[in-house]
Length: 119
Image (tube, rainbow, N blue to C red; front, top):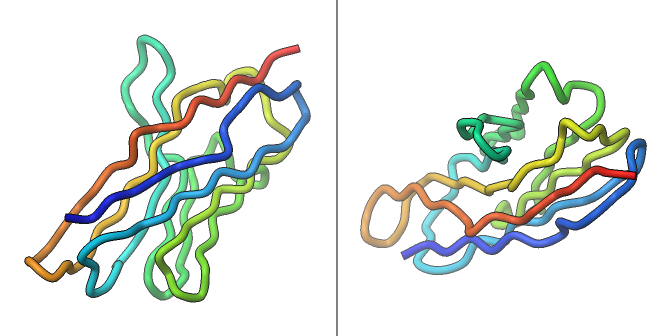
């Protein structure tokens, strides 16, 4: 079992910044990639940013130039630095990770952390 725990959400004014963290733990042999998704009320879950084991990154067009995904050197913790936040960034943000665990391939989700951008 691989567990993901997110933190760092909260209420921020438009134009402000937040940094989300996602820590992976459990029976992990290697993590191939980690990603952040978000889901606003009434909307489907959408991919925000992804980072691979080679530190290749990709972003949704809506967050390019404002959000930055990164990983710790041990590659078990991912971050999402969110700058110049807009009200439309309001959503529950979920961490996702996939790779090889001690019992085989895994793909895990965190419980989500709420981000509210409002004045």
